[in-house]
Amino acid sequence: MKKSVSLILSIFTLCSMTACTIFPSSNSGNDGSNQQSSNSSTSDTTEYTDYKLVDNGKSEYKIVLPADANYDEEIAALEVEELFAEATSITLETVYESEVTYSDTAKLIILGDTQYTENTGVDVDAIPNNGFTVKTVGSNLFVLGEGSGVVYGVHEFLEETLGFEYYVDDVYALNKNVKNLYMPKLNISDAPDIE
Image (cartoon, rainbow, N blue to C red; front, top):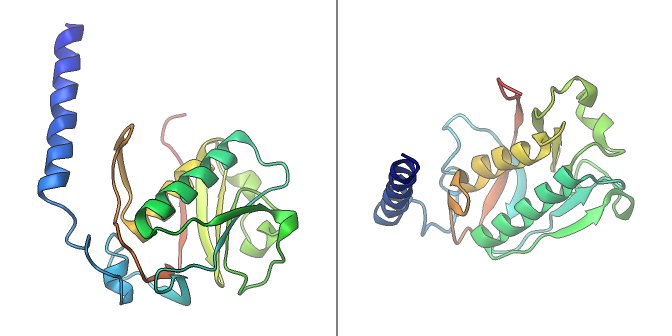
């Protein structure tokens, strides 16, 4: 029985990987020169800021962690750094909150509860366990959450901006060769139905 289940899962994974190879995203070669095509995973009603997350293959954005970052926040930072680099060939710098000055135009991706969280109007204590809120404020993006919620929020952000879809370990979809990308206006909250 265990061998049958293992074989079925292996076949499913292989078929999924083959389908992704045979039917790649129609956006995979796009340089992202306009807002909608560079953000193919978002709906047609998505609004964007005037700030470019990626501008001609470069980015001024930084990943910001709380001074006392926990394990989940560190993992979330690595996820953003690695997947963003894979999609854009840009490695974003990761810093701690004490190393940056906040303003509405600072171009920060802030992960977890920092001294800047008050700018979101979000009550972090009200976020359920493993839940998250992803919110754009000016040029900045906040990913707030409890437990693994920050990681789930990062995945939501990557889905909205870079077409990230996670299937199983090391099997995922992601837009590639992104050269231009506007920061979307996001205000998304979610929590798992089961804890």
